[in-house]
Image (tube, rainbow, N blue to C red; front, top):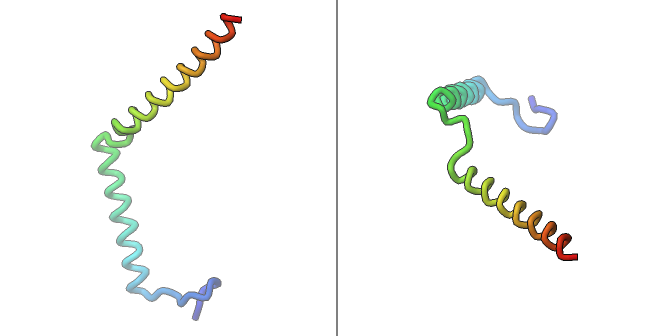
Length: 69
C-alpha cells in the first residue's frame, strides 16, 4: 500500500518512533519554557537595538536636511 505521494505507508515501528520523537520534542519545549527560555536571546536584542539606532540615524538625517533648507 502507498500514500498519495507514492511513498510506502509507514509500519507500526516507524509510527511508534515518530510519536516518541514528537513526545520528546514537546517535553523539551515545555522544559525550556518553564526554565524561562521563551524570550529573545542577547544576540536578538543586540540586532534589534542596532536596527533601531540605524532607523533613528536615518530619521535624524532626514530632519536635519529639512531644517537646512
